[in-house]
Image (cartoon, rainbow, N blue to C red; front, top):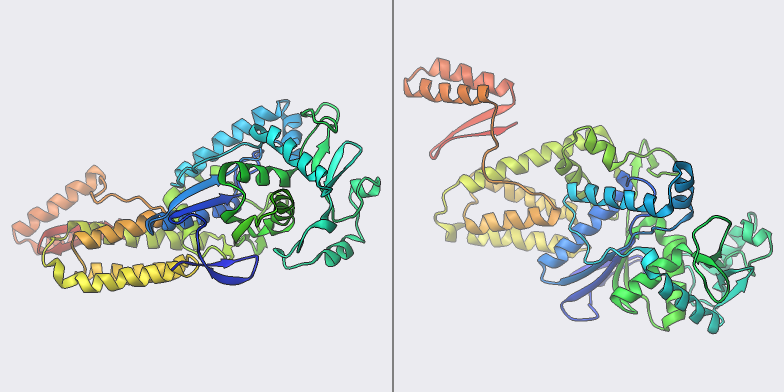
Length: 458
């Protein structure tokens, strides 16, 4: 049985789908005013691994990840560039797809845009007003946090602590007397001059950030979700406010299991656009970094653990990926005989891998099992079509695509390999060894086996 660490309860809980065999999963997507950075990509890849594993275990996953395509940051970027907010958002939505395609991320079942659901958002706000969970102030609509049940439990806080924490600082709305309480948050923002807006019964304006995800998830997945995911920075206030407004609207539990991935650290600090210490996926791939190395780096650490972004960590990911590639070719080149002999050993590897992943998608422990399996492949103890299938399954879960065919070598290296083969046939072993050493200095390792010569890149 799959067990997941539920951020809401801080406990490991069994996955009990609302609908047997099907998972309703929502993951917060990007605000599209810039290219995604490595921290954003970590969340995208982490939940892609979760989704892939759930599918491997036989679940149908209805996976929704949104685009916030109207926001202060988008409006400000549009002003800077002399473009419309729609032009800015479409530019970076296109770039997002390019980046995640390069990282081999499965497309979501749905990628809704906030601007496509404004009518439903207005209805949602009106319902909260009718139920007295919200109030209008100068064209803005705020949610009454005091009426929410267990507000901020997700962030392991309570309302009194939040109000006390806010007492030393005021936002513009509280300072102007618009808000009844410093903890209240905006469901709808009154229109400002020259800003995009929509008409409502309480005046022109645009939706608040928190409102968007509640409405889109509800419209596409229903009142209660099996899993809701996102970065740890979204626990408060974003996900906290989603819970408050959604449960006030439906009267039902919003999410059964909350999942949050850890931060990516750069030079010892959390990577973020606000701190300016970030690298975008776009610029990294433009420098020639192998996207599979970046994918493996992001996928190979347990999703809840922080991830340190360093050149050494990327190099290690690249080296581990080479080892996987070499074992993959060796396994696919091996003869498929006596499969029954390795069957029980293979079953043990599969069982151990599944056990590791069933414990909160612990990919780090799962890869430890996989590396043991690879060692058995390299020693010739593990072979056959079932072993190949398990190898392919693990690669699919971590999102790595390999080919069993050898890569094409430079013409000069090809000639050297042929010359070495000829020297061996002529029993000129001294020349054969010289060529072998020369190739090794270029990172090409040759291996003489009973099935013939194999090579791999060191």
